[in-house]
Image (cartoon, rainbow, N blue to C red; front, side, top):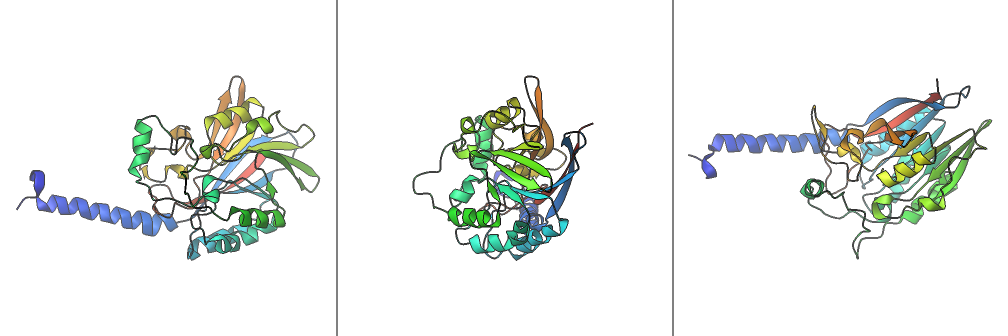
Length: 312
């Protein structure tokens, strides 16, 4: 007996079984296989002591994700000098208490944060194939547009208030500082460019020269923001949003970035150059997924411990 289009039933069944096994693996195992990425960045002024920075991004918390909560809580054992949260903390309107429980031990450390679109709005069911189609059409994810009318409002204010109470610095289109012992660290952040909330013109002007070190923070690594940070002379920019491509091809890599960043820099440490200036860029692959596409393949969920060292 043969299936439609002349394919033997055994082959058709084999393809279906392989696809099912891949789905079970990517949703049941890899999406829950949390990793810590360790990166060294030679970016500090000469003579400055090393700084250990924990970057957490794209948690996309959903009610009932106990393994993710436990893993996030365990990261406090790294004892970072400070934490950078690059947004998209929610994928469930009701998950704020579980998110704050997961991040609670980390909130005992100094920190800074920006928000992403999924902090402001609830997730929507969307055909994942559209991301590939938009790539072919030269578009980027939501193509820089705000969510549609009727999008679910997330209780992002509760997250902001909890972060504020913990002493984390809100970098929403603004500048901020942390004091670490005798060091003054300056940060410049913008709101999520993926939904056109970034207002770099409000924070333009370059690093704070009175600080010992300055860096930029943004959720989605759109080129317009990376260009602005780099042109202004920031030595380091941290971002998230891409999920590292989320569904990658082994030995090839990511197919999409969900923004206009190239796939070669979809996750990890790289550089960004504008004219004669170059910044280090670190893009976190994040530790969660949209609740409607809870799968990862060849791109396990992660947080990153960055050790900032003095330049040569």
